[in-house]
Amino acid sequence: QVQLVESGGGLVQPGGSLRLSCAASGSINAMGWYRQAPGKQREFVASISSGGDTLYRDSVKGRVTISRNSAKKTVYLQMNSLKPEDTAVYYCNTIPPTAWGQGTQVTVSS
Image 1 (cartoon, rainbow, N blue to C red):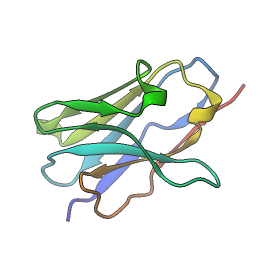
Image 2: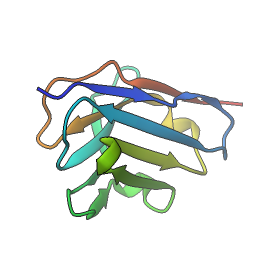
Image 3: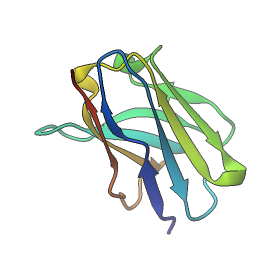
Image 4: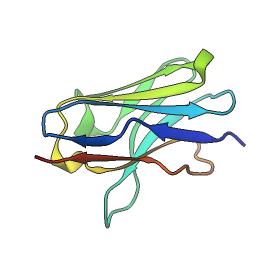
């Protein structure tokens, strides 16, 4: 089972940017980013296939870009124009999901 470690979260002001990274312990195929805000269910954010095809939830389209470096076994999530409603713990996972990691906290606040 692939182990996943997310990093890159932090506190950022509205309108700011963050780049999240997800390092895998083994080879990766389709991968996704998810997030869970306090008191809410975990939700899909973006995904990328092994061939580079991407999908995004509507609320992040145009602000978020998912990418991958398969040689480095790493998936990235570039987030721009961040809004307070983007505040959540962000997780990466395989598609379909397996074991969840600890995630990385993103807080958007002035």
